[in-house]
Structure formats: C-alpha cells, structure tokens
Image 1 (cartoon, rainbow, N blue to C red):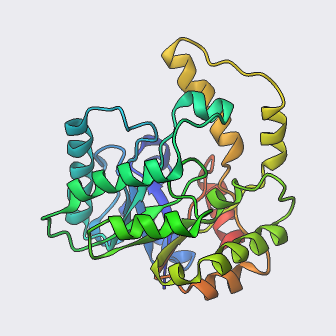
Image 2 (spheres, rainbow, N blue to C red):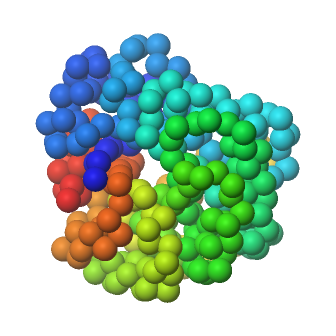
Length: 292
C-alpha cells in the first residue's frame, strides 16, 4: 500500500517549498511514498518531479452536464496526458453533477442514475481506444452520482464503464456528508462499515482511499433551516459557493482508533491523506495526526 499526500500545482502549495528536494524531504520524512497531484496549472518552478507522483487527481468540473462537450473532452485529455507524462499509477475522477443553486438549497435536479449514466458516457468517450497505463479511479461525493448510498447504482457505474483498469477512490469524508446525524469519529467509522456491509462485492474495486473527515452535519441542518439566495453576480456567487462548501467539507485528519481496521478491511493499493491546510506547518501537523 502506497501512502501519499495531496498536492496541487498552485501558488498556494508551491510556495510552501523552496525546491524539489525540499518537497521530497518533507513527504519522505513523514513516511509517505509520494504525491497525489492536481495539475491546476503548469509547474514553472520545477518543484514536482515525475518520480514524486503516484497519482493524478483530474481537475473535475462539478456542474458539467450542460457544458460544451469538446471543451470537456479536451480538458480531461490534457489532464490524462499529464498523468501519462508523470508516470502516474492512477487518476481520480469525480462522478457527480451539482450546480451552485443545488449546493445552496439541496434541491437536486438529477437522480444518481441519471448522473452515473451521463458520467459513464463521458468516461467511455475519453478512454475508449486509448492505451493509458494507469488505473481510472472514480470518486464519490455527497451529491447526485456516485455516493455509495445504493449498491445498485454503484454496480451500474462499474458495469457501464468500458475501461478495464477501473475502480473506486473512496473519499471517507465525502461519504460522511451523506449522514447529518453523525456527531463523532467513532460513529463515522461505524457508518462507513455499514456502507461496506451493504456492498461487500464492491470492496475489491476500492483501490484507493482519500482518508479524511469532517463532521459538519449540524452546520448543514442549520443551513437548511434558513433561506439562502445566491448572488446574481457570477464572481460573488463563486465566493459564496466555495465558502459554503468548505464549511461542509473541511478535509481534516481521521484519527479514531477504528480507522486502521477500516483501512485494513478495504485493503487498498493507495491511501491519500487529503487535507485542506493553511500552511506548511499545519500540513505537517495534520499528516502526523492522521497517518496510519
């Protein structure tokens, strides 16, 4: 099993490290095998070397079903070529559809099956006839699409995607957002085990885990008890949505004593400690807290 940390090609992450050697010494010193890279831009500072990269997290659009198809295909193909060039062992793809209004109101416009069928069509268009060497791991969110709430729709996604090296990236924190009544990490671990109990035949396909948590059900309940209106100004709207989503999905260390047993039950090839942090010091603190 390879353990990685998430890292984006962005000024926020790049400025935390003085050089490629500094970055490498940071993660190896914490017992990690490398990076799960999100290629938000080009690494003009040469701080990320291909041998550091274990996986590539594709830059996924959440509200995509009405976007221009050619633009989407070109975007994802560019990300996939980056993964090939980096020698990535896997890539991560979000199977979801949610627009800003839905994320604000939780009044959803699509069923899980509709999103899964549309996503599978896009994935097949991307991957059919290609000779990519890496695993294509589909990640769950808490919106319509792949959310691991229904074994039938989980199986449907796997059946519809043609690509041979396919599997799942289970994001533990994302799954926890499907239950607003969880109040502690012990309950969270038990909830994840119940999901696995309901679809044990899918466990071998969970080849990776984004290991993180945030128990924000109380926030969501309070949010839904009050009226909210999105701004008409697109730039303001983006800020409103991101502030709201980050209040739900905090990506903090999953530290309960039962986490190791959960991971051992799944027996993945990859575990990524996927955190949202303010600086290098907090990242190091989180990695020390959450590491298995």
